[in-house]
Length: 295
Image: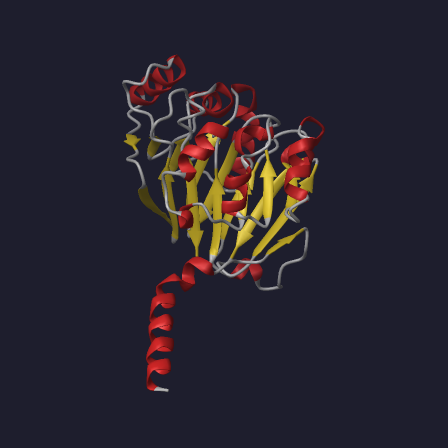
């Protein structure tokens, strides 16, 4: 009997440090949140209707981060949206404390420096790509930011950052070559709630990351479908993340095979082609709402 008790205690002690990793926050899609929802401390991700472009805003605890900025044609619409959301400084200009680019392709970066030219201010521009990376889009953007005295935050592999109480971890496939292969992934944690943003990490990068980082860095309640859902995900990657909801930045009619890949695993699939998506969590559960037709 004593041996059995000792064994059970040892099992419990081994499991305790891992209990947090097993936690997940239920995801409610297009359901009404509790009446006191907006009075709680929330993490919010807004995915704007920029078609086959990425432009997202993370907000938590009074802090904010722009994650990519789409093509330049979306710049003014994004600035107008930020103004409506109250992201303005005393001088009336839109101010977002952190501006992060996952990789230097036009549909993720060009809109950022167009918004800067239109008056957007920020405390830092965040990138995982070094100055020496041979990419004209990146060089143009860095020149623009430095000319306006915007600090450049060069990420280190597996760097962790606090955003108003949420924890962000940045990593990418170390052996990648092109911008998509080197796309910076962001794992966001707030309480028991988790989110994984994958930028344009194609199949080879998905498998590279899968073999490079601990599983806990990939597990997430909500997953951004990599590379606008142009091609289906690597099955091992999708099943490792094991999300409840997957969203894509594309028109549904363009990506039906990817929608089927997700839905046949009983995961909810949503695309911002139908309208802005707002995802909010109090760290215990998610409420995801799509505003049809809204930018």
